[in-house]
Amino acid sequence: MAKRIDGKAFAEGLRERVGEAVSSLQRDHGLTPGLAVVLVGEDPASQVYVRNKGKQTLEAGMKSFEHKLPNTTSETELLGLVNQLNADPDVHGILVQLPLPDQIDSHAVINAINPDKDVDGFHLINVGRLSTGASGLVPCTPLGCLMLLKAKLGDLSGKNAVVVGRSNIVGKPMAALLLAESCTVTIAHSRTQDLAEVCREADILVAAVGRPEMIPGGWVKPGATVIDVGINRIEGEEGKTRLVGDVDYASCEAVAGAITPVPGGVGPMTIACLLRNTVQAACASNGITFDFD
Ligand code: NDP
Image 1: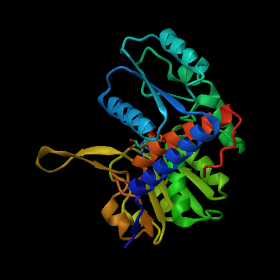
Image 2: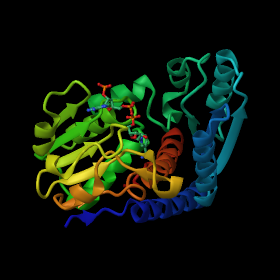
Image 3: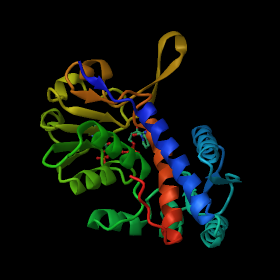
Image 4: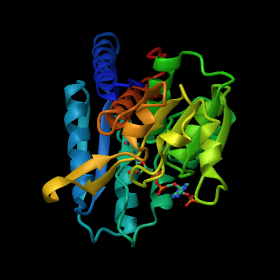
């Protein structure tokens, strides 16, 4: 039976360490890291994320700046706010919650953020830094996955890693991080032929697909480490909904060496890494060495 990787407990520990780092920055440098989160529109899931981000930012002892704009906001108005936040010395991290309404080009907005304040790691400069091995801000969800993998396995070098999904926010940066750890990386996607066979080669299998319980235990190499990024809400018993991942937990758990559950696996790591990235950005902009990890 696979060992369950407790992302919730790991994220709590990470948030505590962020809180300690914030205290020492305040004590030694008079610096309080600040995170600005911008929400456009009333998407219910985004509202929950933004509320949690603000709450956990304050709990870590940081400054939280929330900007809620109506659904009718124009791209020019949003770019104006981004420029204002770029210039604000109290703001070290800027996150624009996605998705944005149709009238706004999200690439234009993301690339208007000062790359050194881009705590989501989505700016082209940070994408370039990650793929060339330069230091920069790394997307939070894949960073969280990597932390869980290293905590579980230690050195990842030489391992066969398969990432299912090639999105810019999860799959591609995940693959870049695993490559930087000297894994042999395969990126699979909707056009991959014989996905089951590809997955069975993986010592590390990361699922970031967005399809409920798509990966069965029969696709998992015995003893492999399975990281399930998926968050899918499905119809449960008595008309209630419940969250499931992209892997079928019950059958994969029986084969894998270790596996993240949904909920309580990768999910809690994302905000914890966002707070960590904000501390990193605050240190970098003040010439302070970031010796956090
Ligand atoms: P996207 O929809 O952007 O990407 C999904 C990827 O999966 C695509 O590359 C797609 O391939 C691939 N795919 C779709 N169907 C198949 C299939 N049948 N076989 C193989 N590959 C397939 O999703 P995201 O990367 O944004 O998110 C993935 C999952 O992770 C979602 O469940 C999302 O909710 C969750 N998520 C969780 C986060 C967290 O905090 N834990 C944060 C972000 C996302 P192709 O490119 O060919 O279309």
